[in-house]
Image (cartoon, rainbow, N blue to C red; front, side, top):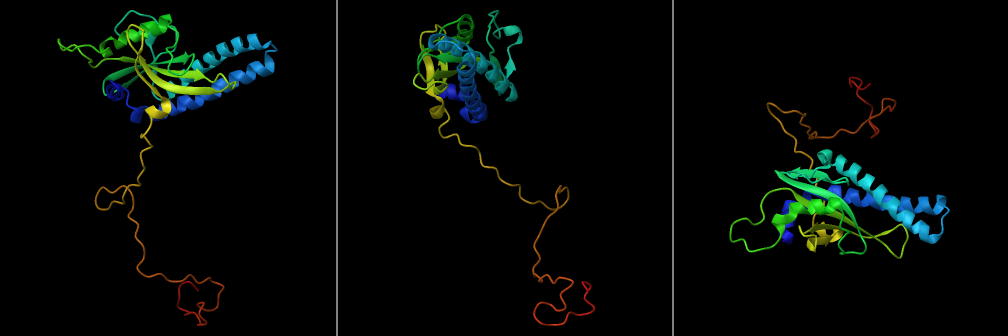
Length: 242
């Protein structure tokens, strides 16, 4: 199942999106903490509650903006594709070679814990019915179609304003377990940036850039004000540089 999910949501293709999400969401968590600490004037209990609300709403906004920058599209009218199920969170749709991915954001109470089930996530996981493991006797096993993937965040309980883990997870249609879960670092492991090679110079008809070649012999530069050639010899008066 692990390799199947990664084929449907390939880390190499979405690497930059996921890294940008990590950066933006870390910054949002820190900003929410500083805002409540410096301006709320509340006791510790109320401060924690307010920070939790502010953190998720600020992350939610950053999540949507980042996905849009990378080509993600907010679900039209908040409707899950091919259903009449409505969602109330910013679920973003991305597509690659006909494979649709509905990407959502969810907070975990701790790493690898299922996020709280709400109306939106319950609607989203209905897309994952065909990912559920079962005997494929009738040929109705996993097939091409949109899948619901969550970008998961667990706050650091020991350090205020910090995140302990980001992960990529796929929850089964019954919302009972993860069909797939990997911390973000592991998910992206081995998917380094592709090297960038400078194009080779071209020549001949249709060349769009000039061909540059080095001179076979190199003459030393002689400043115009210098009376000789730099080696104690008078310069030739016929030299066009005079």
